[in-house]
Length: 381
Image (cartoon, rainbow, N blue to C red; front, side, top):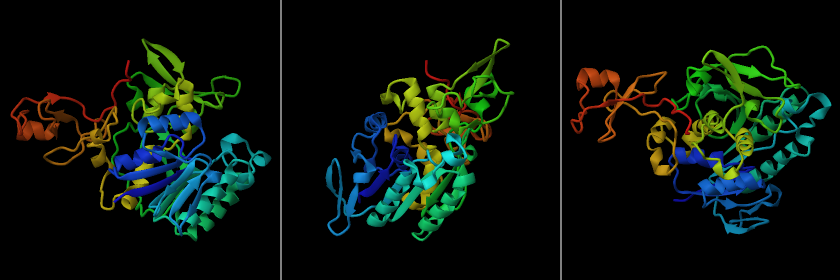
């Protein structure tokens, strides 16, 4: 049975990538997006995506089962999942304080009401909407959204990406998906040292005049990916041959921080544009976790999907593998070092390989090669 998904403000289709991780290969995906670079990234990875254009032109008629927009009309008998990352420019604390933020009445964030309109028109089985944490003069917008979407069956979830990966990215999610708050084990680095390697010293916060602020070790914050505001960013400090070097994040590092496959954004062109699109997107492992029970009920771990990621024809730079004997996950820094057989691709943890099989593959009797399964690979040259 076809799984129908409509994604508003789709960006680079991080929601669609999460669905692939959750093994939903039967998806018919409609995306409302107007950024040409973002659309190019989506179509290069998911060429069957139906692009709708401006969200304000999207209409759904439940009586006839038709979805229409400025780009055409399609038969759509139902909507199984509605996704939206509504614009945050008039809500985000990074875009000014006080009177500068107009909340849901601002020219960008007022598009939230287009999401509500389509939510009522499509009456999906499940939906998820994401936005920034709202503080100060726009705190009432959080209450307004929570009350309005609560009447439609959603609950508000505050989650920070740092619980999944190396990036601190606190966000609000309103969803009908029955997420129980459990964190599944994921394949990506959970600290910057794990991501960058032994040369990593810390994160350097930059001031508006490009002066280096006092050294701030720790996790990277979300606005470090926002190259639209290059003066409000962070740099990585590395110590190479005894010399401290400060540099911006590479595209590969930004992709790791947002947990997307390597070169996923290649179609966007310049490195600057690629990092900007990643910064505007979602942390994919978070979305996969939030949607897991709604999209694939009973699936206990996103990590189990990632072990079969080759089916999606996307290249992941790292992934975890469960031990074939004890089922413990062999992720380099947090769980166990993995042993992989080059001949049959069987993986067991080092403990089982040593004590049970004396480093001989129980499947094909070849000698194991010792590797660190799950540890992020070095950036491609």
